[in-house]
Image 1 (cartoon, one colour):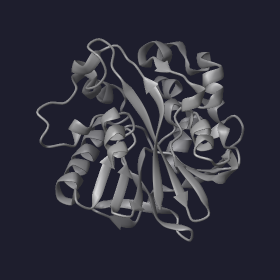
Image 2 (tube, one colour):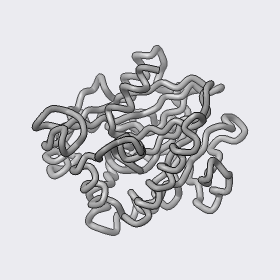
Image 3 (cartoon, one colour):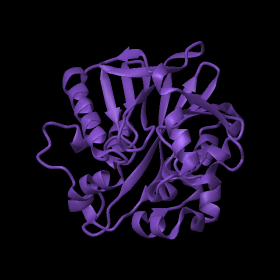
Image 4 (cartoon, one colour):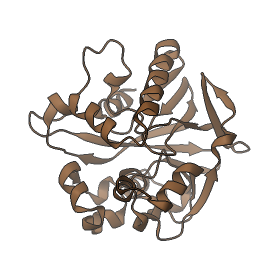
Length: 275
């Protein structure tokens, strides 16, 4: 399967390279790394970043999010317009697989109303309940007010052994080498998405980590700001750290077979473009 790497948003928090690992001396730069997979019967998106409605009305993202994350909202960067720029129609996107439902990952699902939206059941329950202050901030019901075609994948079905992790085959009869891989900690139902390419596997780790230095044993340091932010927003920081250890072990033992990327590190996008 051919995989396109889409940079669907730029976010510019105050902090600069020392705190965030990328950007300028004062203002950092984060990406919104989404995948567009050319499947045998149509297109599959992995995450969507912000949608056209978010660009049209940024206020719905919330004052705190806008002031802290400082997204540069551009209609041309949305998944919808990038799909069109590649010569496809929005209707060609048959499935969207979400690592989780945070507002900077799920905002574009409304731009593809005919697509089936795949998500771990724990995550959808949490997004609907919004039972804590943090979850009221991270989930934005307006982004799925159109009534998406949800496909809930129960966590207990994660029985497919995959490089020491457990996965769920999302479309077993159509795309057997596409798995939802629970990566606990960041949110209640956070997952990675694994897809087999011509030269091996690609694992989109979502927000299981924020910088490639988190999983690179050769890295002398990790961005202090991102490390603190990950701890702050994790629904279960112990589980997050355990997940990170498992991803580090996966990279150490199977780097020749599995390539890891995360959602917000521009380094991963540059590396993908180089490939």
